[in-house]
Image 1 (cartoon, rainbow, N blue to C red):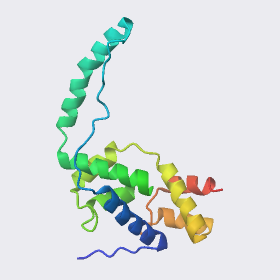
Image 2: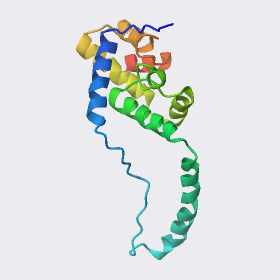
Image 3: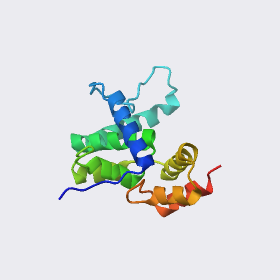
Image 4: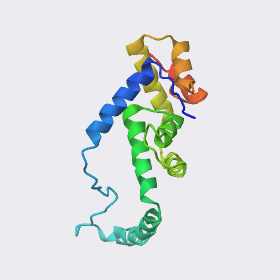
Length: 169
């Protein structure tokens, strides 16, 4: 059975933006930069030497934990972070996009891992979406709220949507 997704004007706009973002960020370069790598210098005070040694002892444990995470799970997390940061999507919206056969096609387990490990301010995303609807679509507060919580729209929680409406200027 095929699922039919209903997209409102905002959803269609989000889909177009998503396609553009994927095209821009998909340059074929799969190299990664480890932002957690620490570079020690010889000018470090000796009083911090004990702390530095302790940090070095703890780092391999963290790396070992990350090494046990399947590559596809890590990819799902990176993609989820992109959706959250660039498209201001909701947690549920990102999950659905990650598992959709018309979206990313990740297994449900990888998508759930991504959602469980994604730290983001969902209320801020709801507010940004609300501002976009208010400015570009001239929608009423009640229509924006409905779009934010709709299962066919943005899929924010009622609390996130209400925060957005309460903080619209």
